[in-house]
Image (cartoon, rainbow, N blue to C red; front, side, top):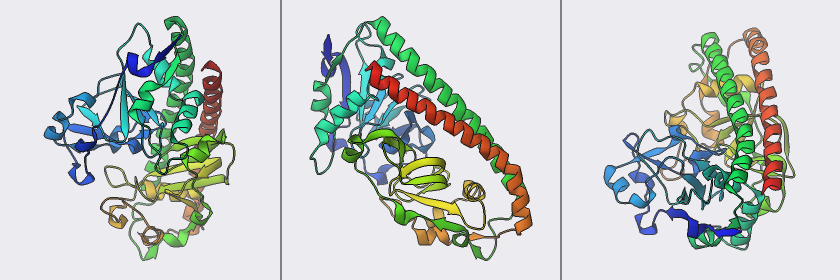
Length: 368
C-alpha cells in the first residue's frame, strides 16, 4: 500500500512574506534559526546556527521545531536531510527548509521516513521536479503529493535499525577523529605559540588549486550517482561517479559559509578521490605539510579578511595576506614526525567512514 505524504504527515515551510533577512540575524539570543548550510551530513550543526528575536520566532508557530522533526532543504542544495534529536533552545527554520513531522505513528516510523528521504528513490523524485528549472526549487505541493510504500511497522523498524547501526558507527568514528584533531591542535599551539606574528604571508606557503574546480548542478549530480564525494564549503553534498582530485588536500570555505560563530575558518581535511565545488578553496602546503597548514588555520581567526555583507567571501588575495612567522625547517620537520601518525589514523578512520557510507548507499538503494 502507498500513502500520500501530505495526507499522513505534517509538512510546513516558512511562509514567503515572513521571510527573514540576514540583517535581522543576531549574534546571540534565546531563539535559534536553522539554514540549509547548517545541515551537514545528516546532522544539524547547532554551533553554526544564527539567532532571531522573540517576536520573529513567535510569529511563525507552524514552524517551531519539536524533537524528532525531520528537516529537508528545498532551495540551494535541495534534498539535504537532518533529524532534530535535541532542542536546548527554542528553534525555527529559514525559508529554504521544510519541516516534516510524523503525526501518524500507527502508520510510519519516523526514522524510516528519515532514511527514505536519503534514498535514490527520493532523489529521483527531486530530479523529476527540478529538471529544466532555471532556479531549482522543491515545492510544498509536490512534496505533499508524493506517494511512498508503507511496509508494516515491524519492517520499517528493521530497515531503520540496520541503517542506524551504520550511522552510529560513523558518529563514533567522527568523535574519535575530533579528539585526534584536538590533540594535534594542542600540540601545534604548544610548538608554535607565536605563529600569528611575523612579516611573512601565509600565501607563500600555500599551493592553490582553485583553477581546477568545476561545479556541478544538482541536476547534473543526480544524473551521475556513484561512490565519489562531491564536496561543498562545509560538507559532502552528494556522491557521483567521477572525481577530479586525488590525494591529501585542505578545503577552506570561500563564499557563503566561511567562518564559524567564533570567527575561525570552515575547514575540511580531505584525503582520497573527490570532486570539490567552487565554494571552497582547494589548498595544499608549500614548503610546509598540508597537515601543518590545516592546524595553522585551525587556530587562526579570519574575520578580518572576510568581505561581503550579504554573501560572505574570502578571496585568494585576502587569504594569502595573513601574516605569519614561519619557524625553521628543522622544527617543522620534528613537528611533522609527531603529527604524522595522528593524521595517518585520522585518514584510516575517514576511509572506514567512506566504506560505511558506500554500504549505506547500497542498502538505501535495495531497502527502498
